[in-house]
Image (cartoon, rainbow, N blue to C red; front, side, top):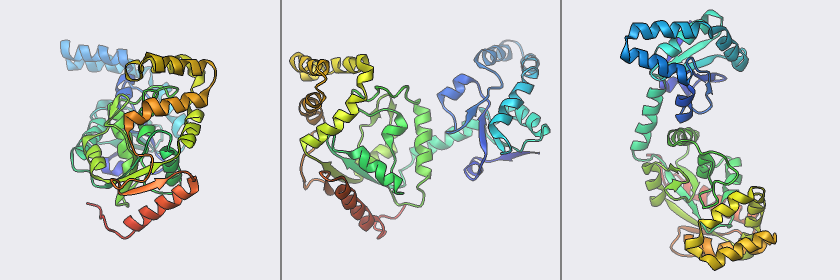
Length: 351
């Protein structure tokens, strides 16, 4: 028996394999995070059937679709069986229509436990849009600081300890600077970024706050939803700072990982020409040629990053809290203490 389930019910499914039966292009534009793509119709087939539907008749399109699908069913079943094993599967298409229904019937007949999402991906996408159109229901704590102060490392450790950290750079697959794309591959689409962000947020429904690193509204090619970005601007602002030497050391580790993509690194540097000038650019390129990564990192900090972001490199009263990262363990301890004291007392209840 195929079980029709609502959008709210899918979040309670355990050990269930999500399968998106839409075409490859539809899947790549956006899907439910974690879903596998097993298209009932591939891109070309979907286009052909769609053209017949509009130019001839729905009946003719259905006949052609049946011809295409009939030869695929054994292979489709095998793909699903390999992915799911003995686990249930949850199928969805665009609107919860014929594509997911036809696959669900076949899988059910073959003895698999099958769920089908009512309303399909369209209903899921609508829920994401509605969520981000409303006031963001968490207080946001924003960790700020100049490049190389160790913000990312601190947040990763806190996340590992169970603190409600959302890694915006990780979700967007971009580091947020002129070098942010190097070595990371393609970014998600805007729709998929929002889906990934929403999934992360739902992990923290029992918290009154979330913790993020400060980002511009745009990270590479994706944009932080307005409600989230507004909450970041209005939230608690924490400054983390460190010495120039320590900051340069952190950048050296990052940029030595990029040298394998030397052409990409040099192309990114060329984009800084207008900001730092030809002479500084030539100096940076010369340092790369000489493998002088410490000098390269220090020069970038002083001539590009610090003028760009402009955060203080010491405690400053304009922030709600300030932390030195001269000692990583001390920085973590101080931040833990601040968060636990502020939020465990319930001073900022969930809206």
